[in-house]
Image 1 (tube, helix red, strand yellow):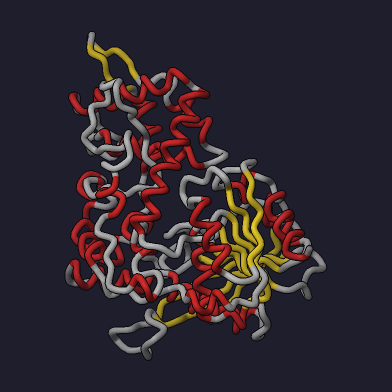
Image 2: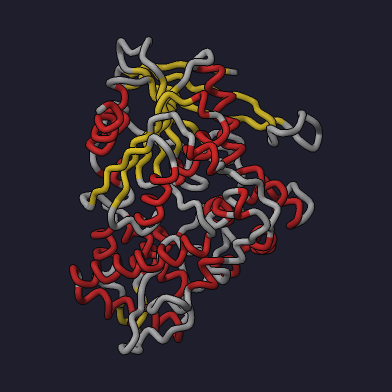
Amino acid sequence: MRTTTYVQHSCTVHEHRLEVPLDHSKPISPTNPKIEIFAREIIRPGGEKLPHLVFLQGGPGGKGPRQGDFRDGWIGEALKEFRVVLLDQRGTGQSTRMDWQALQELPDDQARADHLMLFRQDQIIKDAEAFRAEITDGAKWTTLGQSYGGFLTLAYLSTAPEAVEASLVTGGLPGLVHVDDIYRLSYEKTAARNRFYFSRYPGDEQKIREVAAHVRDTEELLPTGERLSSERLRMIGMSLGMQSRTDMLHYLLEGPFVTLRGERRLSLEFLEGVAAEVAMNPMYGVLQEAIYACATPELAGTATAWSADRLAEEVPGFAKDADPLDASEPYYLTGEHMMRRIFDEDPALAPLAGTSDILAARTDWPAVYSPERLAANEVPIAAAVYEEDMFVPRELSLATAQAVRNTRTWITNEYQHDGLRASSGRVFAHLLELLRD
């Protein structure tokens, strides 16, 4: 492991880089090369002997937090009792990147799909274990999992529970069920968040309908050069699930139209704002449904088959080709729902369309959770379950909490999915108290 050290706002920061196999189940070879994993370890003054806490970031495809002053927010709260390790999961941040530039070196879509199978929960946890052996000299550490980080937590407890002292989870107890069951509930939660938003900002529902109808009939180009479709427009609904972004959506919609030479057009400011909202991390796009594939041994042999796209027609308000001006039907913004057409429209995703089709059809994924081991779990878990979470449905999280021994839950409607970040450390402190109560 290579380490560089500096001091940032009185905190000691170690930047660690460690080489691991691309596939931990096989020996290093030309077809299984080494990749580099990066982690940033932060230590408050006088905290050199504190135990370690590793943060498992949301995603997939999310890098560890970058923060100007680590003494702020939840990290500052955690530094009171831990040395905090911010892991850049494989393919993200300063770890060996997984993007189109890197994937171009592979010969075809099948090879790229095979490569991407190695960027799920199972391999990420093995990376974390390799780091733990180096950073803690083999001592146990505490995990904190936000969103997808909670999925990683259960993968950790399924494969290496002996490495974990305790686990904190925020908005991230996954449903141990088929992806279709997850997305059916996700659509219902997203519909509810739409209704809440429209009740707060009544005029915005009509604006959304008018803009969607406009882009259906009129070519409007995003700053990246492609035409804005109604499906991509509806992706701005991701903001509805975030404490810190819901109200910002209203500001985006407050003046979408301008008149140019007597013609109604979308303003450049609005188009730039939409582009910023719908910009897609390719790793998130291609793996969003894959993280649910064959998650347990009981689900072996099943494909995701573009679940969100297929199920869009089931819940009123989400039909892909609905007429936005038909007031007899609701017309909702979408959330964490990857539609197949997006891969033909988004320049960042288009090169990976064929690869994504292969991933959606695959049935040979390894299981990432062991219900049997989780039922016998001895590691104490404290989990925040957000009542209105539109990304990780409450019902499934509570069912998982019942199935995983030693899990205590805090159910709250005070926060949305980003409560860890939005609460300035209160969510973290409450879970730590719950863990020790």
